[in-house]
Image (cartoon, rainbow, N blue to C red; front, side):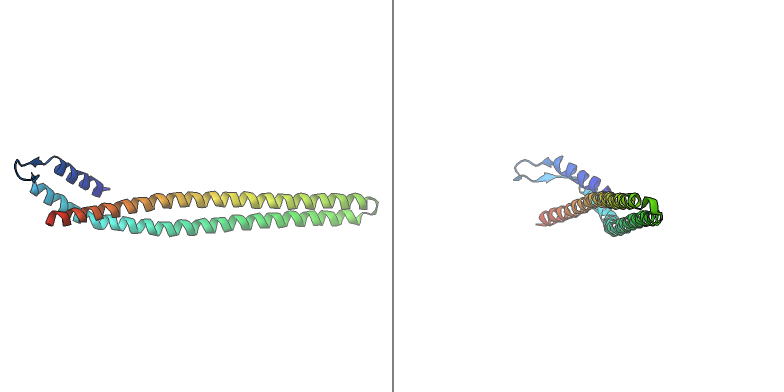
Length: 168
């Protein structure tokens, strides 16, 4: 952030200025260096603005990617749950077709279906936790980026106020 360094340098020049005696608090500063710093700030300002726009664009991409990843995880979990249930039902049909173990087959099938349903719930819960973590990380990153943009904007406003107060 070159703008921050330039602002710091301006502040150092102002804070290090020599106060003229009997002048009501007026100071002497190196106007040539201040003009150079202002020119550098004007040159770097578009770069800072582009950076802020890139951060905003990245935000949209992060959210879109997070949603896509979340949807894919949920879809895989649902497919796996369906496969487990289908396998359990198939196994139940085979067991039921054998006359001597009909009762046992029914019980095992019910247990397998219950286990598959429980597994399905666990998979969905795990997927939801993962998706929430991904979205939280995205939210944290976006918050940091937004804070940087706000800080840059405030710095620019402060510079403008200083210019305006210096003109008066």
